[in-house]
Amino acid sequence: MELPELHIGNLLPKFPIVQGGMAVRISTAPLAAAVAEAGGVGTIAGTGMSVEELQSEIRQARRLTGGIIGVNVLFAVRDFANLVQAAIKGKIDFIVAGAGFSRDMFIWGKEAGIPIIPIVSSARLARVAEKLGAAAVVVEGTEAGGHLGTERPLREIVPEVRRAVKIPLIAAGGIAEGDDGAEMFALGADGVQMATRFIASEECPVPQAFKDMHVNVDPEDIILIESPVGMTGRAIRNPFSEALQAKEPPPIEACDGCLKRCSRYYCILDTLRRAQQGDVTGGLVFSGTSATRIKEILPVAEIIRRFVAGVKNAPKSHNLL
Image 1 (cartoon, helix red, strand yellow):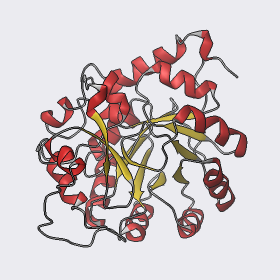
Image 2 (cartoon, one colour; image 1 turned 90 degrees about the vertical axis):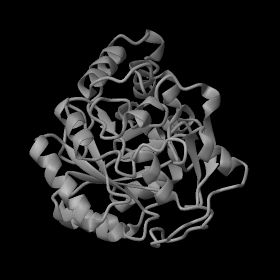
Image 3 (cartoon, rainbow, N blue to C red; image 1 turned 90 degrees about the horizontal axis):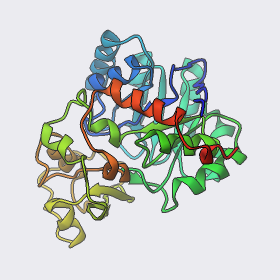
């Protein structure tokens, strides 16, 4: 199977592979730049950063690569508007918004000439996004890591969205190998987004213990948890996530009001930071179902090379369209 072209506004990457934005401080400049240098699309996750930190990450990424770099910001965070504006001022190539989106961001993007890409999980929201001026949509299924907007599998949603909109469609959730990509391209996707797979890369700037958590994961250890954001999340089983399932979350030690709305069930920012800093027992380790198929930690360029080769050598049964 030949790889499709992925157009994001006037941008055209060598490969239709987008690295998903993973907060807190997992998808930073080193990882995003490595993906962009290898011919994909890199993404810095702005959620959990200050405006100054995000601007610094954008500058660092620009020093490391001349490739395509975007910013992802969770709509649920209180600083959403400030972070998006900071990304625009940093002349980022595109902006992705997850866990909801606002009409304002499409206006801001149009004024600045920067493509806006919302994450959606239904044909209805994809149509709304297209009417508002989205350059593309990331269509996310239940297989994804982190906050989930649906319980439906990606292979059911992609064809529905493809029929509903004409803008580019980027499939996300549970994608790690060329076969996964070939299936999504056959269903009508113009590109794929991978996040979890890039955690297990040499360039991902997280402790080794965090990377190791995403290799050879037993399917039973990929579980659903409740998030104070008000959405279900997908994570790897550890003592912290088991405590959440037992309705015994740790008390909140301090709160800086990072979310627009928070159930205060526990502090998600604190627990994500703990994991990112290497505490993989007391922190929250978000992960998609693709972690069950990751066998080794590789350089980003090799992950992309193998993915592309896998698509090209995929069984003809994937050529559905």
